[in-house]
Image 1 (cartoon, rainbow, N blue to C red):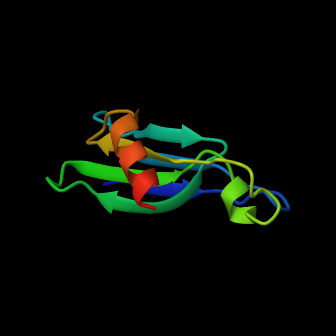
Image 2: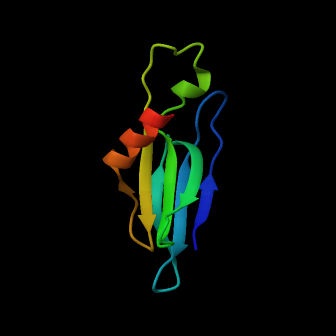
Length: 99
């Protein structure tokens, strides 16, 4: 079970994203925390062991007209059980090339 908290940005920019899961001691455990992460989607892993966070590190693509020269690849993080999120370069590269 995951609790996804997404804060709004001030004015034009991305807010923050925090993901919590229950810890063994009953207290919430932070498994993902990013001050500037533009979340696009959350997908379950095929084996059901966790989730994929798909997004971008900045909001430059959200304003493509003003930032058309900026390359902003997707970044995929894997959250498995209660372990901290892990960045996956291979999945990120493949997703960016497909989209």
